[in-house]
Length: 340
Image (cartoon, rainbow, N blue to C red; front, side):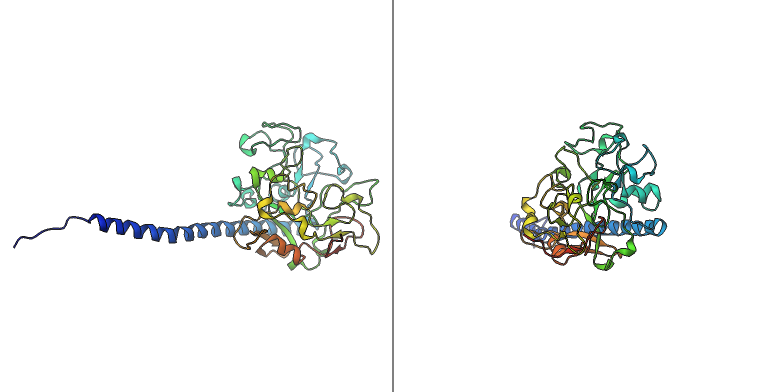
């Protein structure tokens, strides 16, 4: 009897194998992609937790939470004085001294890469004044001198890339000396903050339009700024005007923003950090979860050091940014609902 040996697949069998493989890939690839995205979000959370531990260690040594940024006295080191902290720097070539510097170079506790998140472009936003290295600049960025090309001065004392921003009610701006204004910024003792397990310390930036989301009207990427979670009764969400907010004992002048001030996720673009409605629009929504028009989540670290992944609107509805505007002088209790 003649024996026939089968050397391979028929065309139909091969097509069936290809079809089955395509189906399996269609099932598995989204799962693998989702797993990778989840791993990146977890790494961001771990970095944010590490940074929060650095802030806690700093307060043990220096009593206060570090300022969000200040004008330094010289072009190196971390020396600064309250008298220099006005609306305009007397030595603009010195750049900004950012809170990340206090944790990396100042105390040497936290490595620079702890301030990055793999879900953000280049790991994080560039410094406001990036310095001489072209790799430290973002496309279309200008520094404090209006230059769009690498330059030596000013160069900020800040990590090269930063994915995280502070709660501006905890990390004060540098407006510590404001003669003629009813309010000024003030340093915050961590022990004065009530409900530390439910008060946000920091979160993640958004990187929309290659960090155009963090640009001011001079095209600077102002990554040195913290986000301001509250609205002034007279001054709205403009963080440059809050020092004119009246200070009346017993009368709340700061409020959580109403929903209309928060942009739907699809509508966000550039200049979010200086949005007069609310700078909370510059908070990231790039992790999975929370659908709807305000969908997407970000990692939030709280003063007690734990991290939660939440949608922005939930942080507002649950009033997780604090019950006081701790970093500003005068009566600073926050009302839960913005008055129209």
